[in-house]
Image (cartoon, rainbow, N blue to C red; front, side, top):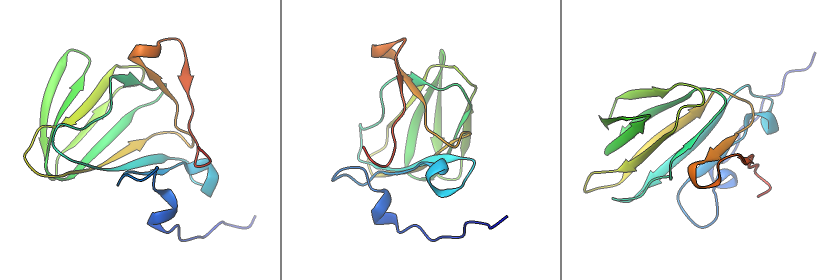
Length: 127
């Protein structure tokens, strides 16, 4: 079996004109996916959940991470994990940029948004 070995330039993973990047593992022969998020104060995704765990590593800044009914304040170097099918979100609660890696334990990203319950959102790099 031939192994896929590739370097993926960061710019090719960028979503729109923002600073966030999305890596969909299946598109690169990997068993996990991730978002590399670079948010300004007050920014963060809305409440959502996944049929797998999501783990965050805070690289820089501060985040309020909501998991179920708990809110945890994570700072640079901290790791937080949300269990599968648990509603969660994070927001940059600091005064500078938040850089965080959001690892999805799946080769594809599958999200259900609170405001669109019952509908699964499965983005890819072609979006």
